[in-house]
Length: 180
Image 1: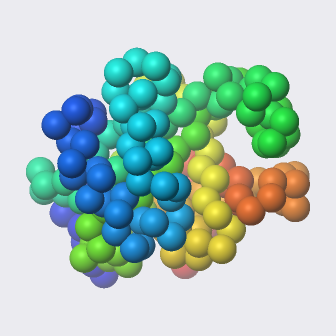
Image 2 (image 1 turned 120 degrees about the horizontal axis):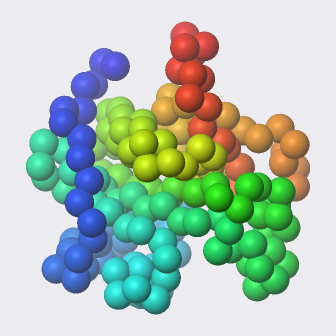
């Protein structure tokens, strides 16, 4: 990797991180793909305070926070409230997890941090027993799609054209061996 990102780690989000997350959610490169700042921060608060089962973390680079990553349980979203707008959820295994992330610090965009962090995070999820890991970027977010491909994610062919604006990608453990 030409821009080796350094040591990647993760720390669970705590209430003391909310000001930093608010700052990141206000950044133009994040606003383009994420929702309204206070609504997104409210979702994260629900996670931290146990009202949502999604697990939120800061991405740490050499012990400094540079981004945000979370994983959510597909089975918890296979209900009428979610599947009415996202019927593709029904096609995934209930024990699958989905990942969302953003690089909060614009200085770290296009430097390999996102794909490196995602690779390390997926390895952790696999060690924790999750066999199916998906990610669902907006199909127009080409920077994200390329980063996810570098981390071993591939579009799920049977879902092509059935998921609206999002591209459902699944992690393949040995996908990187086929990349040039």
